[in-house]
Length: 345
Ligand SMILES: *Cc1c(COP(=O)(O)O)cnc(C)c1O
Image 1 (cartoon, rainbow, N blue to C red):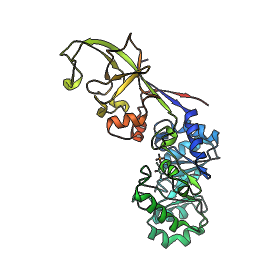
Image 2: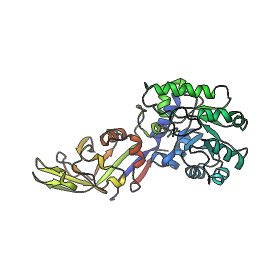
Image 3: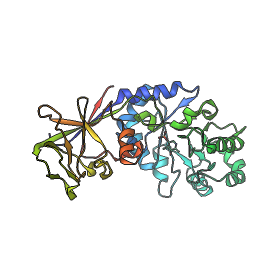
Image 4: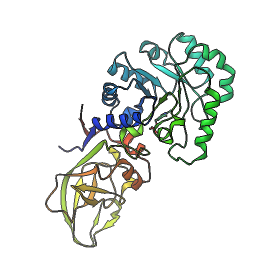
């Protein structure tokens, strides 16, 4: 096997969903946009549906269509980009629930698909998606009569518990939504951890399900094993890889493993991170290239067949920190070339 193995632990995803669910008294949905943060939306959503999740969120209607096909009629599938022009047939035929972001979207939806489900997104400060509070105020009486299934907003700084924006957004959200008789949702993973005030009727965790920060107690979900293509001896003064960026200062053994930046192991990891053989850390030396990474295995006995870059010892967030990014980006960049194996369920 010359491609790397990505092992995805569905039981760990379910356990993470359950523990985020047990942190609140309300319903817990699951966010599976971007193909389940790169781990396979269909597999993840099926596992979570079996565990009791009844609501899923995706970014685009196309993602919702794929999910509807996999999950059948039961679960509610919410579309965060709302009702975009051209999506009417998909939304109507597949019973998707758009989270409407503007008066234009609301008009489009009620005209094209009257008496079908929709939610409302309100901007409470992030200035990314949702109606402005003033916009909402103008159309609220009409919109409420159409019986939205959910009114929601999104926190911009929930991963920083002491950031003043959290309280400010909470206050705006409460003012806008109190007494409407519509179910409410404000919290993603970070918001769940901010406490009860932020929970309302429904939470929408994503990254925490997949083992990422800010859910510190998450179970690790992914393991990524890279096959060793060859191992060579490198003498003092010899260099390794593009740009000769690393030069041996002692007699070294260098393993070349089969994955690179085309597989989401971004070039910024060059020289900054490590792979593991059992629990021994082996530093990346030289530059990460498109399909290959060179690793110092001087201190390892024998010839390992695989070296591991993600496991219980090195999380997506550890790897992200080494590469100057966030766990979300590492997860969603995990490459299409990996052979994927699902554990559990
Ligand atoms: C992505 C997203 C979520 C999930 O966020 P996490 O930080 O991954 O838990 C929830 N709600 C909205 C609107 C999102 O865009």
